[in-house]
Each structure stands twice: as structure tokens, then as C-alpha cells.
Image (cartoon, rainbow, N blue to C red; front, side, top):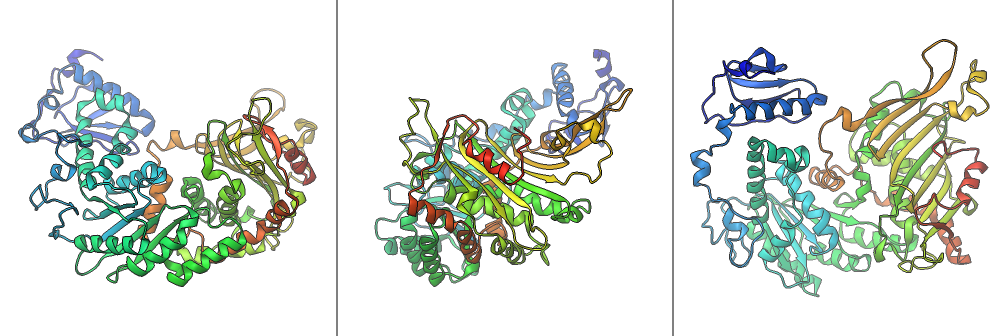
Amino acid sequence: MSVSSFQSLTPLSRSSRAEIASPSSAALTFPATVRVGTELGSLRSRGGLVVAHGRSSSFCRKLRRLKLWQMLNVGQWWREPSPAKELKKKKNIITNNNQASPAELVETPLRSSQAHSLDSPVKVRSGASLCIAVVGATGELARGKIFPALFALYYSGFLPEDVGIFGYSRKELTDEDLRSIIASNLTCRIDHQYGISLVQLFPFISSFRENCGDKMDAFLARTYHLNGGFDNREGMSKLNASMEQIESESEANRIFYLSVPQEALPDVASALADYAQTRKGWNRVIIEKPFGFDPLSSHQLTRTLLSKFEEKQLYRIDHLLGRNLIENLTVLRFSNLVFEPLWSRNHIRNVQIIMSEDSSMQTGRYFDGYGIIQDIVHSHVLQTIALLAMEPPISLDGEDIRNEKVKVLRSIRKLDPTDVILGQYKTSDVGKVNVALNSSTPTYFAAALYIDNARWDGVPFLIRTGMGLIEHRMEIRIQFHHVPGLLYRERIGHNIDAATNELILRDVPDEAILVKINNKIPGLGLQLDASELNLLYKDRYNLEVPDSYEHLLLDVVDGDNHLFMRSDELAAAWGILSPVLEEMDKNHTAPELYELGGRGPVGAYYLWAKHGVRWLDD
């Protein structure tokens, strides 16, 4: 590309505003010139804007052209700040004693000294239509996941501008203290989407970061802390009064995220129901797993909750169900004619559900005491099977989908303890079990499940989930029957399993949909090869995938409950696992040890052989 190509460029006014389209769109637009040299390639003028045409795969090439364009001094307009930006004072988000508070950084109709502070209550001119309370606001989950997800939704426009965010804890914190804690974990989506290096390389992108900074200031200014003390009834009464201070007089809805230990949940939920619910709209309560430690404790918890709330108010959250893979199961099945006719025992030989964490994951004391069955299998694995195996619902309404899920769960045969392998990883220190875990806490679970209905009779659903394994992996593998009377058997060899057609739905690593088929290798002669038709998300969709908490919290705001377990689903899931739990308690079953960073217990391979299945990835 020559310099002469740019000699005919005519700059536009600096008042033009920079715009950049989403990476997934077909063009990038920004103000620059009216006429463009022909050697600029796919950069063409359109209505006074230079448009970088092309698919998302050409994104990097477009940016390289933009860099050259900047080096040739065509882009001086973005280097000089506008008068408005000169007048705007840059402010820091995280405050200290010598800085202004986040409330003072946001332009509001109120005086900055009064804006959005519950320490000196002021009636907000425009009342909040939605309040969200995070109970357990200083915990690791709230700081690392819940508040960042709420900000991401606020930044993206999925929460109302006037939303009120309340952090409820037992600590003596001011509003500013909580805001500083939250701000330290917030990031701008523009940094994730384009990368810090690109933001530094192209200054016009920085306008998006400034907009994100404004949004962050606004979000923090609408965040308040409330010390609930040790009397939940008094604490919830104070929470109710604080919410009423900023709520609209006509309509007000509330969401309560109960990020508290299981032993504290009944008392917190009861106090909330009696003292903190609004009468001017709906109330929704989010409950973290585990939903009890066994069938009895789960039943007691459910009875307590249903004595205070209606079923439609309860949202039992499992963040793993917010993954794109899970949401895509019903889309893949019910919107593609090619899959649904094959979705039965007539064509499917087995289904494998794999969820493994590598040795970098730490279990911690939260995991100890109940292990992988209550943490992963009871909710995530069984819900995945239910979505995968259910009949078509009559609509996409959450209750219609949950009706079909519970039918599948009730049809799953109770687990035979002989069809289950429990394991626990051991450290490399002379083969000793990890001291952070109780001696009977399983970190690995493998089992063969059967669904006793007309669609799936005789098809094994094989589960393999564990921690401290060789790799971090989440995928579903659907293996089809062998071709009857296969004409090419001699070309395939003795291992006919290598020619098995598979549909692989992968979440980690590298989200993808793969279809394994047999194909002729090009050239003379006839040689077959097992190849994969590959839809790799990072190549096809050049965009950021929202965190699973963002997805599920938005579902709660919208009232979409299809990814949240209903009470009857909860009971049905415990019914499947109860024989295994009883066996563990009765006989004090010791889990089989396996090497940290290995492939898991050896007994799992004998279990697959028992059910006529070989893990092809091994």
C-alpha cells in the first residue's frame, strides 16, 4: 500500500463521533474521509464514513489497515479532545479518603453531596422499579461473581437505569466501603471484547472505555450496604425500609440473592418472607446449591421455603446450567430437523456426559462434607440429562419445560450401587489423601444411568465427573449405532468403534459442535478416515460469551425459570441418588484413590466395559 493512495483523502469535521460495530457484524465504521484510494482494499466510503467490509475472520486485517492509516496522520481528529472532554474531569472509580465518592462522580438531578446515599436518606426524584439485594454481600461468591454479573447486565442495558443494588451482611461497612470492595472486581466489557492492547493501539476505542467508566460510576452510586446484624428479623426490616426509600411509589419489584451457608438459609429465608417482601410488585428469591445434603434435609428445606413462598418465587441456581452448551441443547434438538428424528434408542447407542476439573482447581472447605454428588451430580448432571432426553414441550414457557424435565427424572431408574464408581484424588506426597478433604468425601463420580421410557429404553447414559484430573473438560458425546451390514468393514479394520458416528457438544476447552463421520481419503485407492465436521465457536462467532451468572440473573429478572430446579425435580433427583447415599452411610464406603492430575479411578474403565461402552477419547 503506497502513500500516494491517501493523497486524495479529505478529513471530516472533528465533531463526528467514532462508532465501532460489534466484532460479529459485517462492517466496522468510523468517521474519516469522503474519498478513499483504491489501494485501501476493502475499506470503502459510505455516507462520509469509511467502512471496513468483510466477515469477522478478517477483523485483524482491518485493524492493521487502521493502524497504517493512523501512522499516515489521517486520524488526527481522534488525538485532539473535544471541548466537552476538556471540561470533563477524569475521576477514579475506587475511592479513598482523599477522593470523591462514586456518588459524586455521577450526574444526577440531586446535589452531589446527597446523591444516592442511604447514610443520609433522600427521596430520589425518579423511584427505582427494581431492587436487588445480595445477602452475604462480602462473601467470595458475591464479590467474585454476583456483583460483576450485575454490573455487566447494567452496563449492557439489561437492568433499569434506576435499579437499586443492596449488599446485606453482618459487617460494619459504609456504602463507600462496599463500593470499593465491588469496584476492585469490576471490569469493562470493551476490555474483554477487543483486548487492552487494541484499546491502547487505537485511541478512538477509548471512548467506549470512558462510557464504561461512566456506567461503573452510576452502578456503584446505586449500590448500598446494610448491616443486618445477628437478628435476621430486625435486619430484614431495615432492608425493607432502605428499599422503600428509593423505590417508586407505584410499582416496585425485588430480587433477593441468598448467598449464605445452608445451615443459615431457613432462618434468613423466613425473616425475608415476613419482613422484606414488597407489596407493590413481585418478589423472587435466588437460592444457591447444594439444595440440602441428602433427601431428608432437602425435603425439610423445601417444606420451610414453601411455607413462606410460592413455588414460582423460588429460583434454585446452579451456575453450570447457565453455560451456553446447556441453553443450546433445546435449540439444537427442536430447531433442526436433522437431529430430532435420530434422538431415540433406534439410532443412539449411548450418551456420555463428561465434566472434569484439572488439578489447578481447589476444592476448599465448601466442597468438604458432601462432595461431588451433592455439588455436581444432583443438580448439573441430572438437569443436563433431563434437557437432553425430554420430550418436546408444548411451548418455551418455563413451566412447560420443567414439566417435561421432571418426567425424565421420574423415569430414570434408581442407581444400583454396583453401577457407581466413587473416587478421591490423592496428593503426590507419599500417596496421602489431601488433608483438606474428609476421608470419605468423593471427588470423582462415574455411573451408568438408564431411562425407563419408550424413547430411551436400554440406552446407557454414562456419567464421568471429577476433580484433580488430567484436564479441564466439559462435553456431551452422543454415539450412534453402527451401520447395519457395513459395506466398508474391511476398510475400517478390526476396531469398528473407530467408525462410530458421534455428535459432540463441547463447552470446554474451545466451545464447539462436532459431528464425527467416515470419509474417503483423497487419492488413489479406497481408504477411510474418521473426520470431524467442526463448528468452532471462536472462529465462527467473534464475540464475548457472557458469564453464566449473567445469563441466569437475567433469566430471574425476566421471570424465565426453565433452568432452575422446581421442588418436584429436586425430589426426583434425590430419589435417583438415594441408594448410593444410603450405601455410603451404611457401609462407610471408601472412595477409590486416584493420582492427582491423572485419569481417575481404574474401576471406571471396568464399569464402561460392563455396559459395552468404550470411551473413544481415551
